[in-house]
View: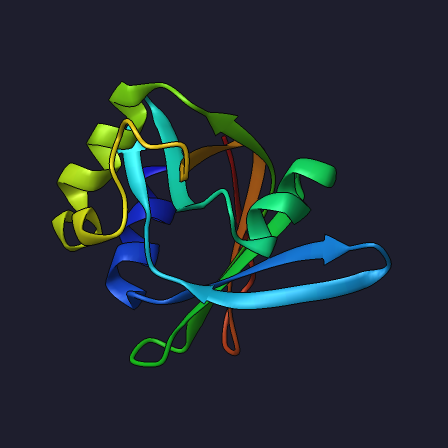
Length: 132
């Protein structure tokens, strides 16, 4: 899990894929945090991505490190954690988000990845899989 976290932090931007009905939806994300031994992301509950993950919590993350030619795909079930402590940890890691989010508002959403299968791939080597 730490290797996945470090890779996503290094890339800065990753892409989160969800499903809306029968249509895939993909968008860039940048928040990733370790809290209480779990990997978390953050969004707003008013956004379509939040509604999509609540309707179908299976999602995938994809990121590419152009310098190494390595990419990462993570398939997981997204689990909402509404605790103030989880939100506060995320906002401590990303203080610039405090202009839009608060750990006590009704919009801030933190989610952790459950039953995650992460695959590191490159053009020149065998894939490496990590589960957490």
